[in-house]
Length: 294
Image (cartoon, rainbow, N blue to C red; front, side, top):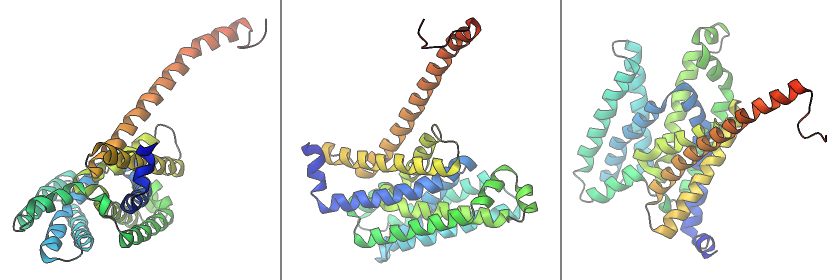
């Protein structure tokens, strides 16, 4: 059991685990809506939209998360502005800003003397460097996520089906959309330290995809997605410790593998249920009950 006990004896590993758990819950809540609304590309774009702010903060010696948050908010605002103008489609607007912000981030970082190290952290995160201050920020981000998701839940649900109905019911779909984009931005920024800007979508989407195989109601899906995300964090960190792999990439890979296992298991159970159905039908026609003594 040394593979499990030894990592827990290191303070930095425990902090990484706690931080990863907080990130998993944030992504479980927000990722559920991302999957339902088909907003995966937006999450990826915001993740890359952080790069200029992170890069500039790195060069200037400012707080990295602050720079990333400002840049991500600017990216979200730019997407909304282009969409309101109506001259470009939503996907086209995101695609153009995606490439533009990514290029700008690389250009800024290229002027830093520690280019290679900074670029690696930016793209893949450094979950093992999470400190107590980061844990406090993640806890605050989690509270904000839960409050906003609860406040706008009805608006999110109505807008997901028909924005006109949401408008008729007075649920302000435009405000709900802004709140949802804000939640995605918050989730991406919160996940930056754990998995970086390149792998954030894996932790945002994979647990929610896995959860939808087992839950139909939105709150239940959020809970299951959070649990799957926590498991992915634990498995990824343990794999990183024992196999010497990159922690952020290990977490993202574990999340994808769990989604694949979930889909395979759900498919196997459905096939087994369908294969039993003809026998149950036949027994019903003959008047017998399955399992009843003869």
